[in-house]
Length: 140
Image (cartoon, rainbow, N blue to C red):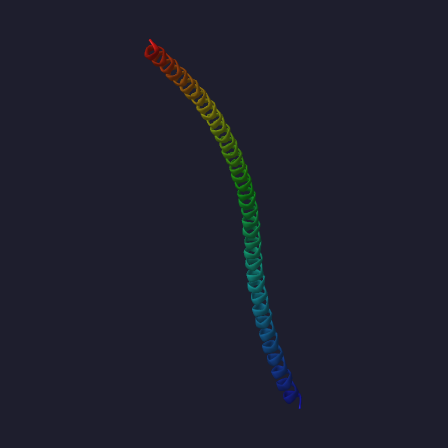
């Protein structure tokens, strides 16, 4: 019985050692697995941080582009307004010049009409004088 007991104790001791060895192996595998998971988590965190930084950079660049676009649009609108104003002023100047030319032409036409009337009056006076001179010559 004592031998049987020792045999069982020996088996129990072997099984205990095997269980401890298996537990140690499992513990080591679990630790390795945890380290791998931690490493992957750290890598993912780093990638997430990099992605966030890239997104922030893109947002900043987009804001700058929007500002530049607004500034360019404002400059373009300002230039367009200046050109419209200049064009309007030029049109007003041309209208005034045309009006002056029309007034000058009207004055010239009135002066020519006055000269024509004067010439017609002089012609009529000369005809009258000629007619009177003929009548006087016929009487003598």
